[in-house]
Image: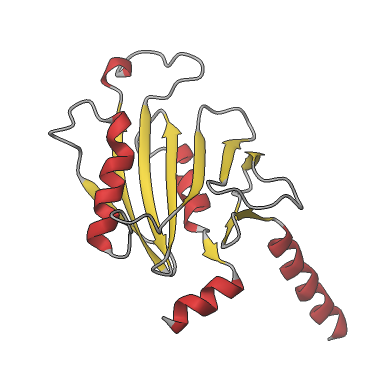
Length: 188
């Protein structure tokens, strides 16, 4: 029985050890087929717009970038579904081909929060090979965790509903508030 307890303890520790910090308030767990290409160095202080970038280990043409955003700028505080929807549209605007006719916004499942996504396809790359360093599709996701932590995420990939997208989405959906932030969020 002691061995089983020790094994469970070691497994839990290894899972926690593989979580990356996104700023001070959020942890992200990487998908096994992906790796963190850049992020905050251990022991470094949190940056205002801390960003993590993940890419597939096997070199597939996909990337997910997650950034903590300030959520206390007067006039643009995100606290609910409607303000998150406005933030998502503003964040996706660089990828829109027709700003007056944006693609639909979809809701994604995420623990302890709300997430909205807008998928944009580059019309100049439809039916053509994708040049190195470019992507056919960008899905912009805006996440509000615990009603106070704002995350901006962009998933870059080449085929709709592909394995690349699904795996990147799993990375995003792993976002969790640190224990301190989760306690504060429940107190609100």
